[in-house]
Structures are given as structure tokens and as C-alpha cells.
Image (cartoon, rainbow, N blue to C red; front, side, top):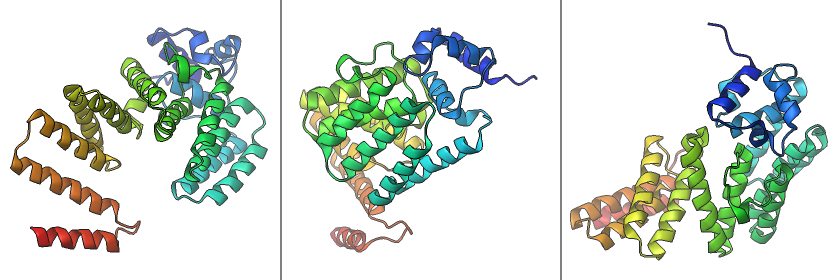
Length: 306
């Protein structure tokens, strides 16, 4: 079977989902440029290809893209920045981010969106949440998405970075107690995932937290049945992929909601409490998988109570 070209893949994904060229390329490139990419008259640079495929619900990891040495270097630099931020090494991440800024000239709006997103993450790590929120909103403007946090997603198509920015605005708004904006955006993200069924619903680590936040909202409004449904969705998502990030919080809230609805007995409460406790111990482990002193103390206290 003949392999499809990059252009054929772009056109097939777009037409299959009944999307216009304008929807796909808004804020990224011109309609004429997209038409040339689909006709294989030109090849988009990797950063642009990533945005286009992600807006069409696919990640470029599924396809073989030929990249230049500079594009490979830029991609590697991003991975290094991500690792440093995940480890909380803010100063090292800032240094690499500056080097990244100096290297990215073409498609500057796309690179700048990434740079400001990462600057916002650094602000968040430094507990500068208001500054971070401003930067996340600013970053969306680079791809004509600046009004999303007020007007919603509607028929907008988003890349992975744009999805992450909307999520970060929602989460940071929650932290600074702007619950109206936070819950609005979490609802919009859920609608987006449900409507487009993109890879990001399956692979995005933030999906469970979106369900958790919406469950919190419904709990506050005494809609316990809907709250429980969101929590069950989050739990299923996490367990299916063997993920423990925020599973403890999900199960704790689920236990509370089940008690309010009278759906759980004493034995099941004890079982769920033990599961939550086990998760707490796992989260207290160090990176070399040795349980920390705090984890050992928690374990010993639990054994003594049993």
C-alpha cells in the first residue's frame, strides 16, 4: 500500500472532520499556505506541522516527519526545558528558555507562544500566580485565541500548546479564587474533548483534573449525582493508564460524595481509605523508589491502628 504524503494526511484529516482551511490555520498561517501544504507544493516546518496536526486531533509522533538539524535542536531544547521544570529547577530552565528564544526566528509567533507559556510556568513555580495568569492569557494572543478565556472555545480548533494554555488559565484562576472563570474554562475543555475526541482526551494528563474540578463545582452546588459521575470518569481514566497523579484527591472526594448519597457501607469505606492511604505512601516515595521517612511513619502508624 502506498504511504500517504504529509499533504495528503493533512487534507484527509481536515475533510474527514468537515473542517474548513480557515478553521485549521487561523492564527498559524494563511489559507493559501495551508493549501500548498495539502498539495505537497511546500512542506511546513516542524513547529507549524505540530500545530496543524494537533488542531486536527492527531500528534505528529504518529507520522515520520523529516526535520532539519535546527528543528531537531529546537525540539531537543524543548524536551530539556520540560525536564528541568518538572524537577523544579527554575534557574536552569530560565537559562535554556533564553537560549531557545535566541534560536527561534521563523514562525516567531508559535515559538513565542511556547516561550511565554514556559515563563508563566516558572512564575507559577515561584508562586507568582497573578503574573503567570497574565502570561498565559498573553500567550494565547499569538495564535488569535486571546478571547477564549472569556468567550469559550465554540468551534475553535486548538493545538496541544493552546489546550495547555487554556488549562493553565483555568487552573491558575482556581488558585487565585476566580472560580467563575476557572469552572467556565474547565467546562469548555470538557466540551472540546467530547466534541473532537482528539488524542489529547486520551493522552492528556490534565483530563482527570478537569473532571475533578468539575466534580468540585457540582459538589458545591449540591449536584452530587453529577459530581460522582465526573469523579468516576476521572478514576477510570487514571486507573486505565496506571496513573496515580491526583488519584488520591479523586478517591477522597468520591468517598465523600458516596457517603452523602448513602451509596457506601462501613466495610467499603475502610477499603477505600486504605487505597487512599496506599496512594499517599506511593506519592511520598523518592525518585529512586525508596519510601521517605514521612512515608515510613505513615505506614507504621497505619499498621499499628490495624
